[in-house]
Length: 149
Image (cartoon, rainbow, N blue to C red):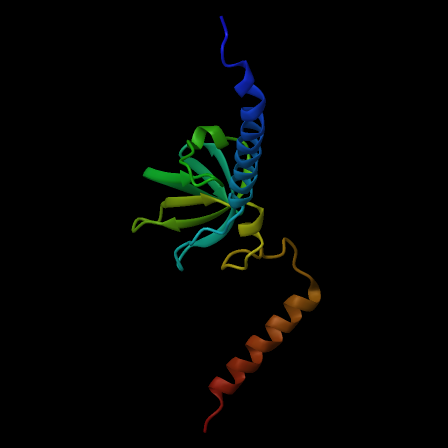
């Protein structure tokens, strides 16, 4: 025996409004994940590749994760280094007193566009014009330093 059938049409618009509100809240939460996190001023930028944990490559140079290193994903949750094995990701990182990489933040697209030290890679070539201008500058400064005043 169902006595509340006359209330169902009155409640349906409320359920639709609640569903719409929850969907809008989820859309805003997904958009908020692209927010820029505050990083320490000393953090540097690099392309990191985990080769065989704890060994990594930072911009193609060999480095090592410290014991207890923390890697935070683009959603700011902790990520295990093994899950990044073989992948190349853009990161900000800090080194500890021994020179090992201790803090790593995997960057999202918005954070990766910000300028930071280490964000520009040196060229992988040397041209004759670059070499000759550097040598000319070095010889000019050595001549000026050796001349008596």
